[in-house]
Length: 149
Image (cartoon, rainbow, N blue to C red; front, side, top):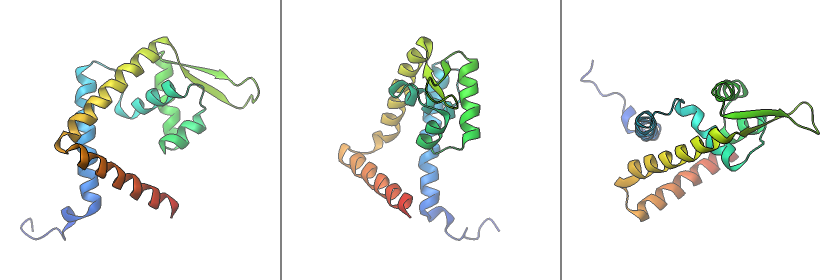
């Protein structure tokens, strides 16, 4: 059975995207572990987003990261327990909580941003600058088209 073709699964677009994702996450994970950052890779985007856009709500983070609200809540809870963020009730809309990095969170977000840039540069170093730009624009274009469907 192992000698039979796998119906060309490995030749599919989806399989190749998953391979690329795995390579990026593997390298990112290595850099995070080497830097002794005690966060999981799925929590890192929140740190980077909140650094650039302080005061976002859980709903806004969910929309930006394309993750469900319960997943966002779990990550936010971890960041709060690690004392990296502050959560404050909105002065105007009492149903809304604004999430902001504190001083420690800001410092860690800066470190994470640098590590993620290093990981991206490392993984994409197999591309020439022109190929890298073309690959990015192609993937972004595909994602935009699929989101409009």
